[in-house]
Image (cartoon, rainbow, N blue to C red):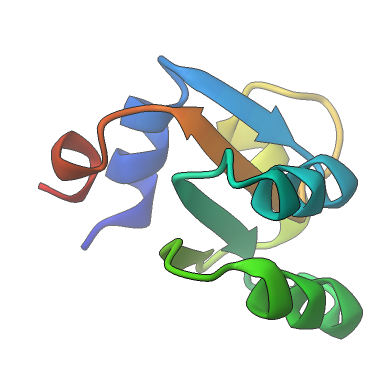
Amino acid sequence: MDVEKVLKKALKGKVYLGSKRTIKALKRGEAKLVIVSANCPKEIREKIERYKKNVPVLVYPGTNMELGALCGKPFSVASLAVIDADIELLTV
């Protein structure tokens, strides 16, 4: 599965950028998919794994700066949660 293609489709819907918002979305059961950068801090990954339940987690092969740029942001993004998207469409 190409994470970049999935991310570009996901960005058309509602997405929460950042580790704090991603973890909150997982705790509330809002997240349908989580994407983390390859260099996401270990503590953040552990929290995401703890709260993910049945939510798929994809690893973007680039850095957090590259993930931020792909999202069209001038800052780093270590993780993001896809809130409003059809998972079947994203994974195809």
